[in-house]
Image 1 (cartoon, rainbow, N blue to C red):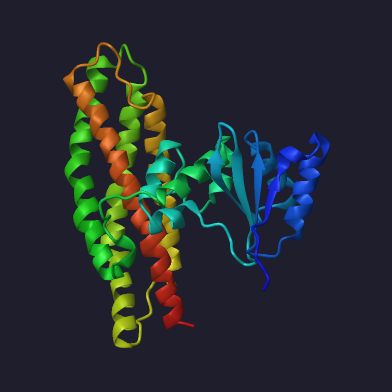
Image 2 (image 1 turned 90 degrees about the horizontal axis):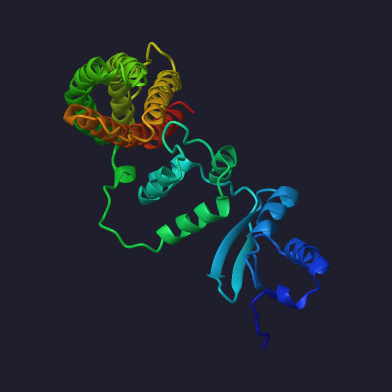
Length: 319
């Protein structure tokens, strides 16, 4: 009877100049889906980047133990055809992980089509640390999140309108009023308040027109897609052709609004209040912070869930 042994390499037993070459040989011997666990007396993070640079994105890296005496890392060879999920896809499956992206300033909504590795490379972030936190999130217990990814698209469309569009319509007028008021009172001492006011006005103009297009054109068509799919009915040709066309426009507008709010956050130094801030100043910053928070979820639900699934339905109906 054959005994299956775990594939372990104790790197501390090797001469320093033989460590990485030996690990590479052992990794190359793996077949797809197999793993190698290395044991070391320090964090082998440089190996991660060397492996990524010389072999490409064909492995998964999981810390099993992190000191102080031993560092144990499981390195698994990916199965061909399995691609890294994008930030948007990860957030769509588990919104708890979006909190990790937000913690590190990784855009999972407007810029959600990047992989974790791509996004970290752009920002100069430690990808091993962020991937480890994402792995730990899988083990966390939390209150049951809303199952956005399981909802029908007609229900999700109505939810976006009734929750997020309503939020924008209710709060944006107040934000505009306070942005103007604070600029007029404090603008002579804080020059950033004028561009903040101008950016708020741009966000208002963009979102007001944007939501009308979604509510009058795109969302009704998505509901038609759902009805045709459920009832096996023929789909009426839309004047805009494929649903991909209005989706492209909506995603572009999402990106513009997202950049405006990111610029406001930069101008305010992450909404840090100056010493002479009055109550209106404080309220403006708090409302802008909350508005951006809501917009991230709003755009995530559209870019990463609603739009891709609408395209899937249309492709099934029009093979």
